[in-house]
Length: 354
Image 1 (cartoon, helix red, strand yellow):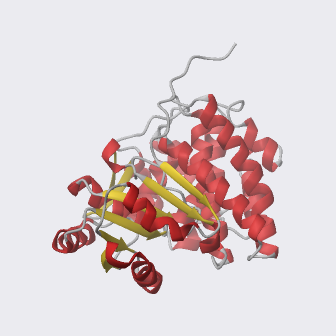
Image 2 (tube, one colour; image 1 turned 60 degrees about the vertical axis):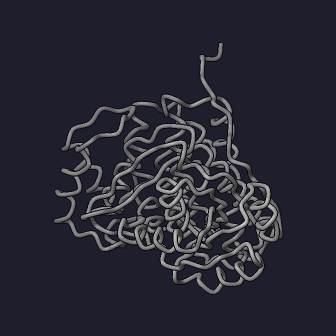
Image 3 (tube, rainbow, N blue to C red; image 1 turned 90 degrees about the vertical axis):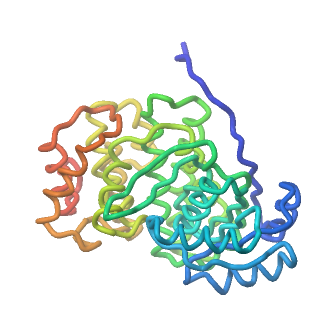
């Protein structure tokens, strides 16, 4: 007999396919927005300018200053540009940094958002905003943060470098992993997560072999949508807390941090909820969910150790202290010593259970 559950329904409009970038103007029109500010990182400024040109009179400018972990000082500059432009919407083109900036602007101004992801990291379907200030990352959830429209264009991922393909996919898998044991999960979300595991397991090795494979890119982008949706409808737990600690206080790269922590946080909670995480073990093999993810990460060339993102062994004590402040709910109770041991294993890069 199925447990009771609540599923609030999806409010974000999704446009998925090949060549769907061309529909950005139509989506702004559908929202009743005649003026939009295009957002990007400095690295993707040229692409943002091309999009602004394609939008014609709907684009009132480009702000290409989005930065990792959504620093508040960058948001303040972007809001000044947004208000000066007279725009009523933002079009966020890029990965999690640009999506985060769009969310931060929307939360403070009420702007509509059209998000166009170019990686698999997957914050676009969520009502979550993580921001950094004074060396700390804080996270909040609010309905006003959730984008109105997300446009997934498979063509935009064809040139995604293999390294970023791998780490952003592992980042997405982390969202689904936590959704499997979230207290507010539902059958809808669980089905999407199961599908995503299989799609990434088949899709990522295929993309390493042929990075421009349209079918493999479509499969991976579909999986990313599933994982992002899962994150948007469930509570976060220990894995995301640790990722926020390292990103906000040690300025580690977002996707790589998630990728490194994933096998270890999975193995840690698998002790308490092995049945909930069984779909991961089934998809990736290895005899366990944590071990299977570590094996897969090694197979596809994902980073396996915190050392690889500049964390020193001396940093682990401070990270453990921060991890037990303002705790997220978690299926397995823990003390600081438990977290310190988990982080040591993640720093050493050894296979969970070895």
